[in-house]
Image (cartoon, rainbow, N blue to C red; front, side, top):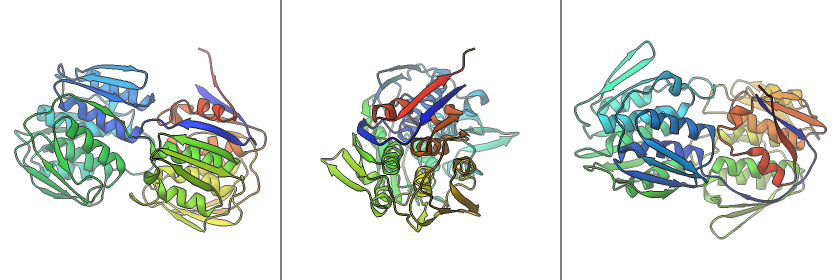
Length: 421
């Protein structure tokens, strides 16, 4: 079991090349099975979740190669439509394969997806939308069986702008006879990236980034080469780390417009942020932040729930009081018990974290319980006095490519230890 050892109280300085987006590459990998040829995905991050997605594709009969942040998927040999529980349970995004597999084979068998435990995250919205497309779905003891003669294009209005349901409808209906209109669609940048990838394969999707997406069905899709968008949550994480610790960092290959809700908070708290060209963000911080009275997560373009833990870590050391309210996931504050071990004055009441900023944190042995909360503990360790040990690093590896090397390159004292045997 890996752990991170951090000796804190160091300013951060240097440059970071932002990794490709985890939440974009996973549905794009699922979409690659729709082509009966070869797809090459550049700027793909080397993450454990990408490995799981690759394992699923290989199980389905695809040939997958990964080298130097480039994934090549040859789906011409895909011949299976069943994804076993051993693969489904490894990550939440595995449900993304449902729409793609149905589109390719007109049938699919999966189990309930796994991933980080953040409270109730039912896939009822996915199932309801797929049924509207003419897919017959049976649920038996955690197994979901889907089949249809053909996709029946229609107008679908989602009960909630779910990212996953939006992506599943796009993938299920992009090869069909007719036009599907999706209303109350998720607007996240990753949805736009999926649209652009499908269109690069010959699809006809428009409207991604708005609340109405139009999917004009095509007869078939072909292989293509595509570059995955930058990871906006990794971008937010590194900006928050510098804001918290002080110093100056430049993020290259970033997309400022994707994280404006985060940078607005950091600027309010006293950071200086500038952009250069279309893909460079520079942040300067004295390491002394002012508390933002209220931060609330919301669907895009609101404050992202995935960036909530790292901004909470910042507020724990900001001067004044703040409330961070979580409106997306019911159990996202579990990591706060670990921050309290480090001296954070934070109390959870319902959906809110009530924080009294403290001048400093102190090192402790803490445990990552999920991906983004684990990243928050790393940031707290970088700020804290003394040594912090973060265990369960496997959660962090799901979304950050060699996080210890990134921070080491910025001057932090952080290393990874692995138990032998």
